[in-house]
Image 1: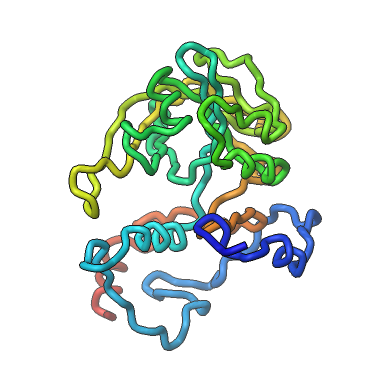
Image 2: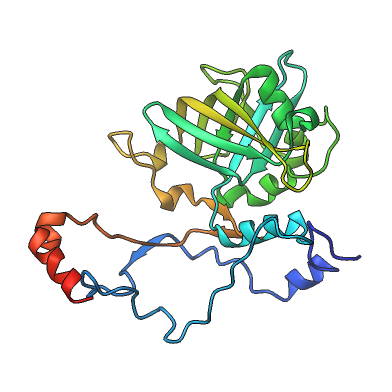
Length: 283
């Protein structure tokens, strides 16, 4: 089997067999920061290389550069990326879809606004985008370690009309209060969403072509498994959520370590304008 965009190994299972087993005993915990004694104006900590190499400037549209290179560069450097595990249903309710998207984040809390990017124009919309544009609703679920393989299975290139729920073996729950799409029962955290805005992007490599679509959604209901939620209903425990993120290529990442750093106060912690002026003089 020759390697391709979605599988860089000729025989993935043989390569996987040489790797260490998944360490299920590794749980989320909090450590010290790399340099607990760091002081204002100190710059990078001791983990920074002593003699870093020079940087290379890259024009994303330089002549002869394949547009796919930009994709590979971005997904391998802007990491880790959260994954929107999107469940949708067509307007007539006959077609369901479930798929992961790593062009995803939230950009506001009042109201809750989440953004998902699709690497295609509306004219060539695939299953999820087609359903979203028709129904103007969806459910965004967060992927946990406990169903990573099933979630990845939904990225299969199934034809329109084939439900990825059966492919994955995950459980749709039809109890959402503001949308018709089901949420993923196995997901610790899910958000019912309605379309807020839609924007297409023109391709620079192929003038006249729509190369991508961005949809902003407004969150209308949060669903959180009760063992992951605090009493005030405002914090989700990462040790229970056990979120999975995307790195470059086919690589996923887990979250097992955290570090806490309070946000500094200009007057109390830095020492105000006088301390700032001293830092400037020492440059």
